[in-house]
Image 1 (cartoon, rainbow, N blue to C red):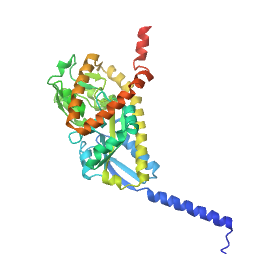
Image 2 (image 1 turned 120 degrees about the horizontal axis):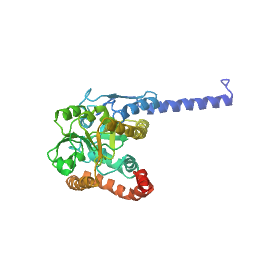
Image 3 (image 1 turned 90 degrees about the vertical axis):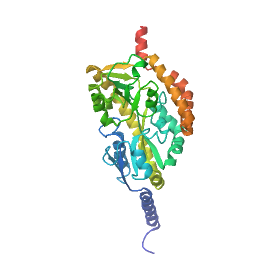
Image 4 (image 1 turned 30 degrees about the vertical axis):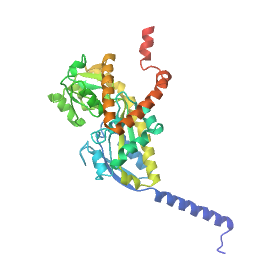
Length: 362
C-alpha cells in the first residue's frame, strides 16, 4: 500500500482526469497569429470597426490563443485585394465587403448586397436557416476561400449628388461611383459607372471627376465629408438593403483548424453581426439630423423613381441569372425566401411610417 485511502485514491483519479481533459481542450484549440488586412479603415464607425471588435473578443474568449491582428487598408495589400490574396494563399485571412470580387465570382455581389433584396436580419435568417450558408460555401470553395459572415449593417444611402435629381433623365451621362450589382443597374440609366475606394471619393467629388457617389451608412459618409462637396443626399438605399461583410479565410488554412477553433471564430463572428447591426441602428438618425442642420438637401426618391429602379433591377437580375448559373441559383433562393417572408413582414410589423400615417389621420 502507498498509504492513500480508497477515497483519496478516487479523488486523485478524478483530479488526474480533470487535468487530462483540460490539457486535451488546450491541445484542441489552435494558437493562431493571423494578420487580417481590411478593405475599410477601422476608424469608419459601424463599417470598419466590427472586425477589430471581433478580434478583441476572440482574444478574450480564447485566452489569447486566437490573435487576429487587423491591418488597415493599404498597409499589407490594396484595399480591394482581399479576395484574391486569400484565394492565392498569400495571406491567411482578410476582411471585406463581399462583392468587390464579383467580376470573378458574380454571385458574390448577392451575398454583399442585393438590390430590393434582403435586409440585414432577413439576410442572417436566410444564411442560417434557408440555405444561404451552404450556397456561400458552394460559391467560394472552388476559389479556395471560406468566407464567414462577420458584420451586417443597415441600408446604405442611395447616394450623394452634386446636382438635384428631378427624374431618370438626369442620370444620363453622369459619372457615378458604385459597387456591385447596383452599379450595373445604374448604368441602365446611361450613367458612366466606376468603382473607387472610399479614401478617394471626397477628392473625386470635389474636383468633378465624379458627379455622384454612393458609399455607405450616414455615419460613414459623414466621416468622409461628402456633405461638404455634394449638397444632395438621396434615400432609401434600394440598391443595398443590407451591407454584409465577411471574414475571408484561405480554405486550406480553414480545413487545418480544429473544430474548437472553428467554432470559436464562427460564434464570435455571429456576435459581431449582432454588434454591427445594433451599432449601425443606434447612430443613423442623429447623423441625418446633422446633415439637415448643415444645409444638406436630404431627399427621398419618389415611388415613380423607385419603380424605375425596380424595373431596371429585374432586367439586370434576369440577364445575370441567365449568364451565370451560380448567380441564378443564389438569387432564386433569396427571392424564394423573400416571397415566403412577405406576409409576415407586411402584417407582423408596424409600417415604418405608422406615426406619420396616424398623425395625418387625426
